[in-house]
Length: 180
Image 1: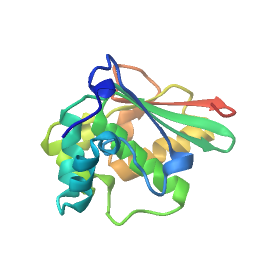
Image 2: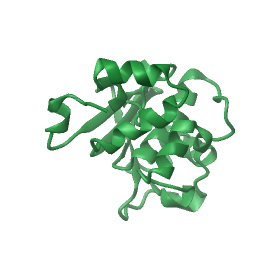
Image 3: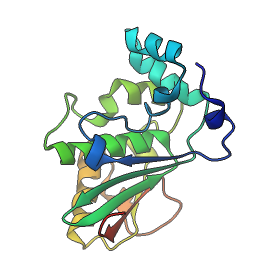
Image 4: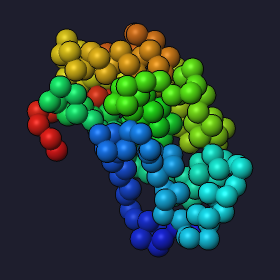
């Protein structure tokens, strides 16, 4: 897969997913870099029956350093920040369900073909216990509580793994007033 030199030469790549804009269609985290491959490679990905495999493998060519998944909830911006590609994709899939108002075709986001291929390639978390969610705002705030509950229920993270104590977490949630 050929990516533009500007991506390959970057010292740091930060992925920002605004779910208010892309919740229905994506791209989210693991398929974002595939949008920038050469036109020939892009056609090959689109035409392939193994689309999820090819899209995910693009992430082997260049690493995304930081991921921000963002959405507005009750007038507050909720951000999930992580450096783990799988945790980022799972968070985006889970929170996108909240935006579109319904669950996707699988039981949990872990069943998504792109997520499954990413775990095989060891691009991030492999099981729910690999993920710990830390709230940067008090968990008593309704917007934080609803986000943590959604992440817990859909991603299968134990309740004890969702807290407001920072100890080197895989993912963190934060809120801010207004739009960013």
